[in-house]
Amino acid sequence: MRVLITVALLCTLSLPGLRSQCPSPGSLKDPEGTKLCARMFTDSHENSTLSCLGEHMNVYPQDDYPFLPRSWNDQISSLVVSRFCSLKVWSRTKKEGKRQTFRAGIQHRLKDVRMGLFRNWDNQISAFYYAVFGVSGTGMRFDLGPVKCRSTEHRRQLNASILRTTGSTTGHLHTGSAAKV
Image 1: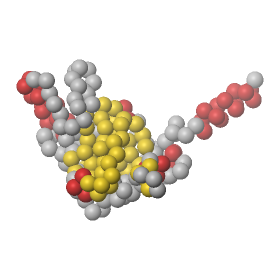
Image 2: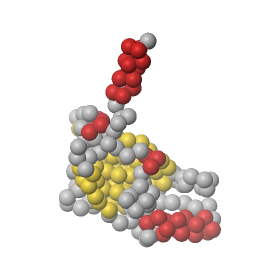
Image 3: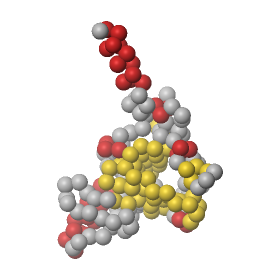
Image 4: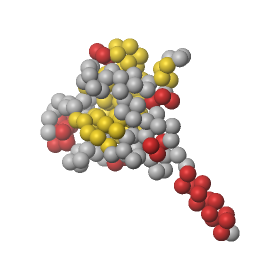
C-alpha cells in the first residue's frame, strides 16, 4: 500500500505545469495588485516548470501596441493570458503579417504554436492588442474588437473601472523581471 501511495504521489508531482513558474491566469496582477490582461516573457523552456522566467511585459486593459519597443520586438517566448481576456498578436509591426489570438491560459512555449507550415511563434511577436470578453459579475459582454457597451451608463461604468485599475484610459507599457531559478 505504501508503494502505491508513493508512486501516485510521485506521478502527481511530476505532471507538467503543476509547479510552473508561470502565474495562474486567474491571479494575474502587477506588484501593486492591479489586474492584468496578460503577461509576456522573454524565456521559455522544454520543461514547463522553467518557463515564464526572465524579463516580462505586463499587458493592461486598453493596451494597444502596433509597435513594440526595440528591446521587446521578436523577443517573446512564453505568455499567460488572464481569464476574460484574449491577446491578439502580429508577426510584423503596424499589426501586419501573420496573426494569432491567445485565449485565457498559459502558453509555456511559443515554439509549440505553429505559424504557417514551417514556422512557430517563438520570438516572432512584433505587435499586440488585448480584447476583453466580459467582466466577471457584471453580466456585460464585449466583442473582440474595441469595447462595445450596451448603454451610456455601461460605458461610464467601464471607463471608471479602467481608470480605477490602470490610472488612465489609455494603455501604458509596464515591464519587469522575474527571478531566474
